[in-house]
Length: 394
Image: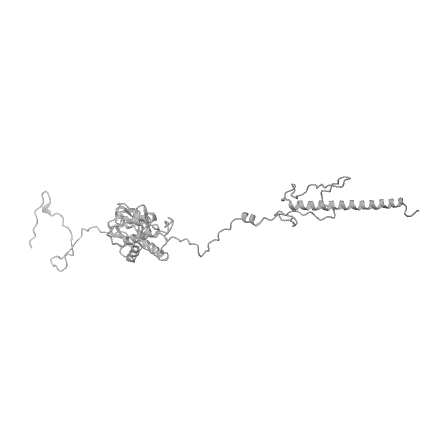
């Protein structure tokens, strides 16, 4: 082979030129790839967070100009050796990797979604306690007001309904100083005061003090006790008012009406025709109405009432078989009974008057016999003829 020939030089030049062109084309392709990657990154940076329906953004195909000999499409996805594409986070920041799982709400969303905090419950020491109403009047039982005139027993029955306290106060006599009227006036006044309807606590206190130890009936004693309870409630709760409630009808009655005893003179026996006394206790009605509407039975026989000495009824024992007998008293549909109240004895035997004539005392010597017999008719008194009297001459 010959050195330095023109043909050899031409071949060498051609080879050198081809190598340069090959290097230049590779450089161009590499530059295009780098430019495409930069364009993709710039598009992702300048994007407003939109994109495809899957929310990934920038998922389209990027086409760049190639060399003169043709065009080349870049793959839509990243190459195996390239770094993962940068995606915008949901809050608009770039560079943070996407979080998987349930997204957490922002502070503003949490503030709007969370319910408003409930107000703190009041402390038990600050809460107002419900006051229990004082006890009210027990049942009497009810007293029949036969004459229509207010009496302490019927006014007590009116007061048993707490809403009638004002009407009961108006029914009281204005000038009576009796203990039962006094305690009922104080009770009606306190009833209005404790319910916030007027009344006068000072007047109620004066009436309570004035009737102490003087209310001697069962209803009077019950009214005095209830009035004391209202005054005690007012001392413990000066500014409080409560609504009074009627006492249940099944509660124990204030009065235990009964026959306390039968007075027969001390021996527990009485004969028919004798007068006995029937003593009553815990009467819940007006004693003035008792005699007009009372019935007394002795041994099942009704007898009239002779004397009403309050609370004693005087009656006469009827004719009954000897033995123990029951006594019953009826008034206003209520009957009380005392079994074997006393014993009826046999009546005293009265002898028939005898025909025997007793002689005068022995001091009279002209009366020799101790007894005299009635004389028969003398012969002179006989009718018809009769012989003359024979005179015996000594």
